[in-house]
Length: 247
Image (cartoon, rainbow, N blue to C red; front, side, top):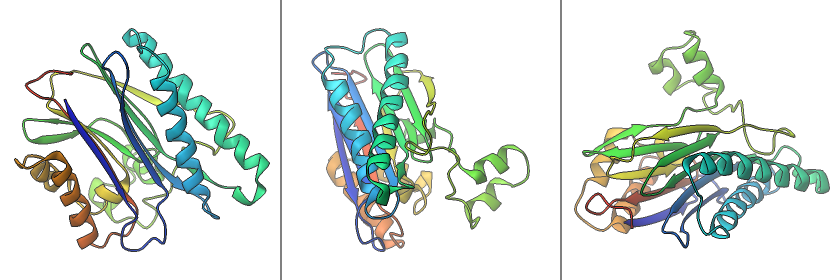
């Protein structure tokens, strides 16, 4: 198993409000997580950092995530705990009112693959040189698409495409969506919308299918996104299977 992650402020934003992590615990299980923060006074940067720090530390503190059912509970519990920590920080620092963050996570073991998400950061599986989106965005525009009020094409350039319906820190309680996915894949990718707003899935998959190092491929994705405008922070994490085995 090979993995790498990168985050970049982009070409427009003055600072980076994204946070990203990939970690392996003592049992050889992997956690990937990406958070895209929002809020003034660097609130988004704080919110995303709180979320990623919490889930990362909690994962490493466990010897194993246990069964699939245990892992599902872990994703749900750790996201609620991160939400409570962000909400508490906001109450203690009034200047941070309105801050929050998206969160997308993936847990990969030899027996199962789970994704969880809140907001519009995305989780994909990579198989046979193609990307397949697993998560569903919690955005106003996506809600309108599901209700039939907008088409997929209209949604791409809608002026309110980034309006979130759900995020960590926005409410006292929050529920994360969890997806159970087959493990017969070639890789797992998580990213913030700074990548997917700049590049189509086919363009991303083409870069991922190149033969150079994973670090070089992710660097190329960041460069391409910036060359297309880099209008937002850009984060990407990728976990690549070697010979079909999780090690």
